[in-house]
Length: 148
Image (cartoon, rainbow, N blue to C red):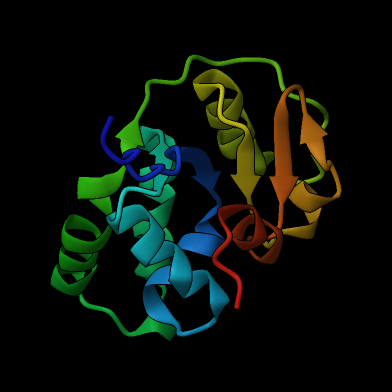
């Protein structure tokens, strides 16, 4: 018998809140390590149309000084080739302090992911919704073994 093939780490599917995506794509803070994780196939971000709409809307905020073509290029080259898009049907979610967070919770539950990654205290305070763990980017990076 020959040598054992190298162990390949399983792909981790997760929903990433807008603040995590913006930090990952635009800044050199720790969430930026997520970009190489999804581009290498270690992480599979799961999105819905509503989530993608929010990513585009937030990236267009004046404080980021991105043009429409820069936003499109950033998403088309750095993110979209690496995501799984699902169709989310309206579903009951727990009482949320911020109703805008429902799109992330319903997507995570519908996609049956284990992780919802957020820097938002309103979501983090939930800790878990059904089988979905809601964690900070730092905690998630530890799960991916991408911490230094």
